[in-house]
Image (cartoon, rainbow, N blue to C red; front, side, top):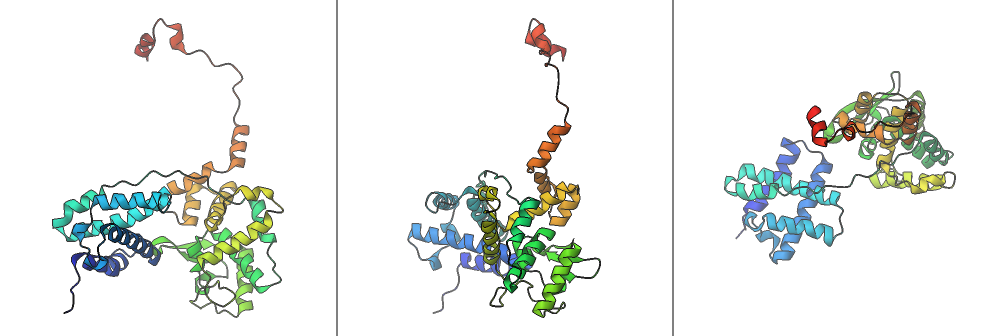
Length: 337
């Protein structure tokens, strides 16, 4: 006799098969992140309860199991708090969905949803100064086809401030290589934005598509590996790392920087900020949902901080003693405020 799916299996199927992709319009990357979180969680629950995963019910999962799983992530898998929070976000999203469909499990879902995210330590934003960027680009061998591709990839990322996935999704049909030069990028949640291109970047892109025999109407990914397959996120990381390692011989200071593909996006933001571009424009350029996200770049550039302190006039006289010290009582001073 065929076994019917239980409530947990039914809700998981609806959540991943319909709710996230169709109703919420989540990107495949978000969906995969939630999927991985739920898979890890269910495997943990099965291992702890010694019960087959096909027999798991919603009643078998509660806040105790979620808390134990989060502790397991940090103590056994050695995940940092940020990764722990990503896993919890996937679990929260699923049980928020279940709460709306199963009122009888509302109290259980609410207790799971009340499990808080852990505060994370913010790291200093790592980026390349303009001079460092030029040295990194200078280490590419533009006499080879792969070298020209790598050079164009890094230049386009620096020009647009694109996320790694945005640059991987870039297609020839998204390029406008006649004035006004621009590229159409699709960010988180498939949000579309138009990013202007420098004339030099447009020239490089034009030469690249001609050299590779690419039609500008093509809807296939622009950047490919040496086997002709679309470049991956690991490929982008490898390319950037390769040239940063080469540049360290010329700029030893790069050894202290923790650089990755997203660092190119930070580099673009700081470069625009140094050029006098206002934060609102930079926010639109990078596709930030809020200008508050962009504000952090105003605090990371050491050179701009030096210029600010040079412009600030130093105080030449000694500060006056606090007025309350001249009074008989600090309470009298407080009363006088």
